[in-house]
Amino acid sequence: MILCHSITELRATIAQRRLSEGGKVAFVPTMGNLHSGHIHLIHEAHKAGNIVVASIFVNPMQFGPNEDLESYPRTLQLDGEKLAEAGCHILFAPSANEIYPQGSDNHTQVCVPELGEELCGAARPGHFTGVTTVVSKLFNIVQPDVALFGQKDFQQLAIIRQMTQDLCLPIEIKGVPTVRGDSGLALSSRNGYLTDEERAKAPRLYQTLVEIRQSIESGESDFDKLCQQAKAQLAEYGFTPDYLSVRRQSDLKPAEAEDSTLVILAAAHLGKARLIDNIAFALDQK
Ligand code: PAF
Image (tube, rainbow, N blue to C red; front, side, top):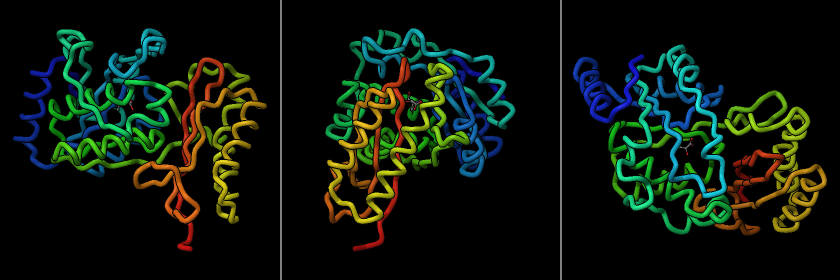
């Protein structure tokens, strides 16, 4: 695996590889601290293209003032070993100065309105503008044919799809199903913040989503009532729920009783970790 820290070096490396091998560049952007979910994205990238590029960049623009930018785990050496073992060909690991030479505050922004302002966007103002700005920069730098993102970040995936479509970027966006531990807990870099006691409680978030899905599949259509009850239960378990909502998959607008392609999304704090999860499913046509 070739490790590149600068944009120039990365562009030259990809160009050379494209020249010698042709084919498709499949790109997996990450913030590092890699777990099996990321490695699964690399394996899926191998199916999508023959030149697999990953990036590791803890993007300051997507962190709010009181968030975990400083403490976010930086584990480049170990991440590089995992990526090399998974067969990643090129790793781009730029410094903040390489991506934002003038700092990120006055940088041009790429913003997807509406979709980026609710759910996680409401709880983390500016977060998705930070994501879409850095992802559009990474897309311009890497110029992939296909880019892969985990479905755990369902809203992020929807926003990136919208951005790619709106900006006419010639990139196929692939969503990859969430990888879960045996307990059902979605793998996340932020699970590392959980204490042993919290880790034992954390799967309750996914179980809650499963129970809501079962109720809806059994005919319950008062989504607000279901979510309010579930939030109260999560609070009893020690979570501080941020949101819990049943939405339409197509545009993430609140679902109505007649909608059939749904996603239940949740975010909740547990100790120092903010956990997010979702279940997407389709009801038999009514
Ligand atoms: O999902 C992430 O890890 C980040 O939001 C991303 C897409 C790499 C942008 O920084």
